[in-house]
Length: 159
Image 1 (tube, helix red, strand yellow):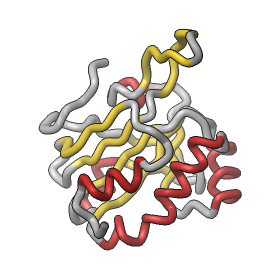
Image 2 (tube, one colour; image 1 turned 135 degrees about the horizontal axis):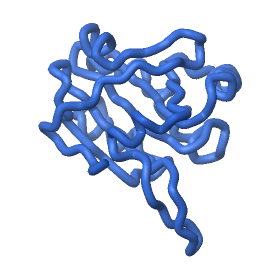
Image 3 (cartoon, one colour; image 1 turned 60 degrees about the vertical axis):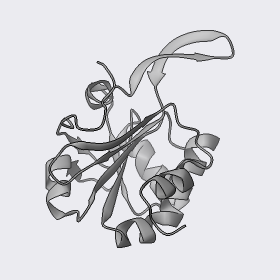
């Protein structure tokens, strides 16, 4: 599917989470003041994904203070996400999309190139969804390092 752009309706989803529960975007939006940050990452426990997750963890208080909720989403199975959350003390929702349906709906699953090889996988992306379900911000092919700081600047959250 094509990538989402600001103003598009964000596809709703319900996915299992690392804590044994589930997360539904529309329910999270109903309780989020300014919206929900959904970030898509390739694999729990890898160096880049760990750095990005820890940056979200370390910024969580200011993101929540500014009215945002955070959901990390990957194709990893729930058990792997649970270990990742434990190992890195992650307290925000980590959702599992093993079938790639949500990743595809958000344009975060597709062809990638790495070291000259082409393959299909997760396109590291972050979307901010407004409380009305529309996309406020859509960033694709983001870098794992420094991305959360850039997102905070883009959202005008404390420097």
